[in-house]
Image 1 (cartoon, rainbow, N blue to C red):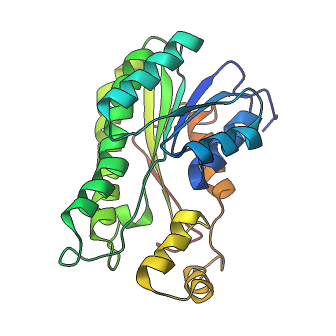
Image 2: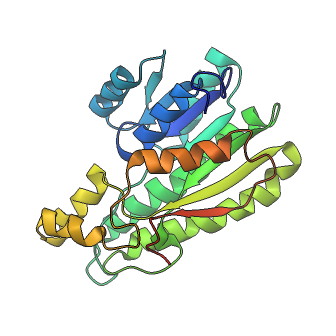
Image 3: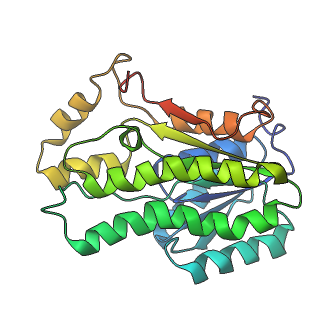
Amino acid sequence: MKEGKDLAGKVALITGGGSGIGLGCASYLAKAGAQVVIVDINDAAGESAIEQIGKDALFIRTDVSSSNDCRSSVEQIARSFGRIDILVNSAGVIRRKSVVDLAEEDWDLVLDVSLKGTYLMSKYVIPVMEHTGGAIVNIGSGWGLKGGPQAAAYCAAKGGVVNLTRAMAIDHGPQKIRVNCVCPGDVDTPLLRSEAVQLGADTDKFMAEAADRPLARVGTPLDIAKAVYFLVSDLSPWVTGAVVTVDGGGLA
């Protein structure tokens, strides 16, 4: 990557960009020259992310499960920059429970943020993007491709994200919009560490077990950001509808 050149002139919108994978993607795309706009429901995290990224990055507080919020944020970005070239749907939450133990409101929360949020933000970005073409990357999960214990809502949401990606790629390819999905394994983020708390597990032991995979470590947000960069850049002009697993060999 020639830092500061590859994505120059591009406008990139990253949901859940205040922390974790979203922040990693926002930072990396900014280094590649993109004008980055972070949306997140957490004001403090969003402002902190902007301070870290610099390069004129912007933060707009947005609840991705709200149609009004998503529409308003996209309209604001379109007015400010006249275009949106890249969308990374990274916002997500997890609740580590089976269907029996899971409260209905937690089911709704996980599906609303991870799956509905991907749908809503794409719904409003695509009409802006279709004038010039663009690239969308939805952040799925290894558990969107296989099951996982005590994570019923999360598995359902991420499985939906994976197949939604394929449907979007079919529908919007004629508009020169590429839509792909990155499915991370365990990545060292606040979200992953929160799982240990939810399960009542020792965090150090939990993280060590998460590293039990062929490459013998958990991932980093940068690992995922590099895969996202590949999919939104000119390195992948004929890639759409793809599901890319980035998990250190865990699924294998």
